[in-house]
Image (cartoon, rainbow, N blue to C red; front, side, top):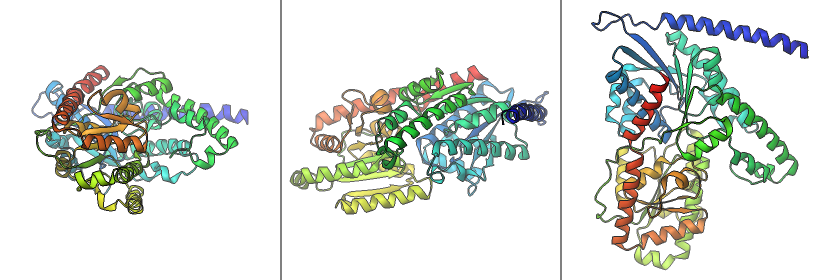
Length: 483
């Protein structure tokens, strides 16, 4: 078998070399734009491929994507007029055209300038996007998803070739690291990664080693010493494979201090911390208006967001302060506002609704799915408390949005919220159901003047650090160093 391996390796290397040379030749032939727009010389085309299979989503990752597009195009129009920018967006959203995609994103994320993007944007539809769904792989999920990254990335380049697109730059804004070696070695692209969350981290490995049951470590494995040891070995092996993928990057940006530390640990790369764009806080209103005793949650309906803990905290609050709540805050309500990416997320919403009924709090809980920016603004202006329950959240754009609007936020005492967002006096951190419930009650009973001070401090702290302008400035500084 060893002789066969030695035979296959140079054969594969020769195939990669020939493929890359052929692709480079075709790309070179496409870099001159035949339409000179009145100039004497044709413009050089810079083609940027952006890999974002779920571009029609409504989460923080999609806001990063569209602010990235907007910033890049504006920069080229102003500072690189001698070049023609062509952006190729690889997405699996085949039921929506380019115009509708841009219009929905502009409305959803309050980005009116996004309309400038359309003439520079070209869509390549990924027909095999479903391969990326983790629900397809109940066992060896990470390894199977890695293979899926490779298959979908190869498919993306082939689809792009048929349409005449040959990117010089491959930008991943969604978290598919095993597309990097495909782009780097098969197609000779420079690889830029914006990492929201490491695919595997030392925290995950330690949880398996310590046999802690969580959403990504099944109780049947955690309860078995043999299975835990096997999974630990598997995670260690995968960590090395993940490291090799990270070595294929030319530049890495991360969204928080927490992500930076984990990426440095896994890839041994010093990344650039570029905080996500959280809007220009246009919805911030006069904090003296009377808000309702409503608790707002903003997050996608994914298992790691742990909205179940929010329902449990609400149940604890209504049980332990039943009389006080009835007398002082009879209209108390928990509002779960978020987006659904697929059928699995829709089913999770139905499960949460069932749990609310089971806990006897259904009348005090509202579910708002795939809300418009106008509806989001309404709740940001009327709620008093913000709640976020994901453990080891990488950043938390929803937290920033709530703080900017004057809500007092209670977030999990870990990850980005603890490291980067919640500052002393501008919010609370919690771990347990009891802590969340108690903080909610304390905030609702805070005197009006004290509450107004906290709201102003909260809004000022995030507006200064996490605006769209700050994102553009840091992003373009990184981009100029690459191009």
